[in-house]
Amino acid sequence: MGNILAVMGLAALAGGMLFFGAVMAPLMFGKLTPDVAGPFIRAAFPRYYLYMIVTSVVAAIGLGLRGKPWYALVACLIAAVTVWLWLGWIPHLNALREAGNKIQFNRDHRLSVFVNAAQFIVAVLLLAGLAG
Image (tube, rainbow, N blue to C red; front, side):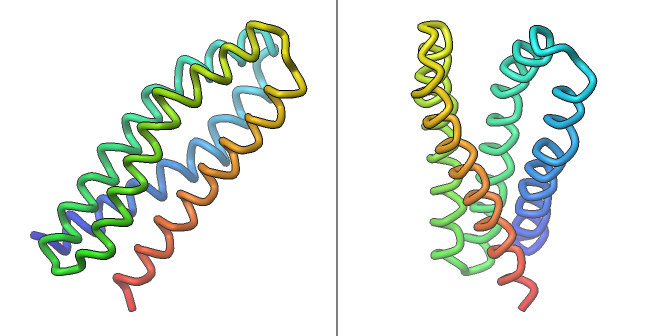
């Protein structure tokens, strides 16, 4: 059961992140006007982050059952960072946007993109580590 939960959790996590970043976001901003795409993607983020939290926790449980405590800890860290992004960083970005502080918003938004990319890379590395 641990193998199934670990692999399915990590595959769903990495696959969902890849789909959102490579398909959904470009599609929204490529086909919708900015005044529609912006609010739409902001409405999608809570679901995206919840998905990331659930899949990384499922992976952590599977990794723990499989006897990979360090891998499980890393999956838990992905979940914890996602909670921080969702509950702390996104409201911060929204406040910057509402205040019209474009320079700080752009800088801080790049940080959130970097963190999300790092989470994706770590999830893929964990998945590859299970295959090896």
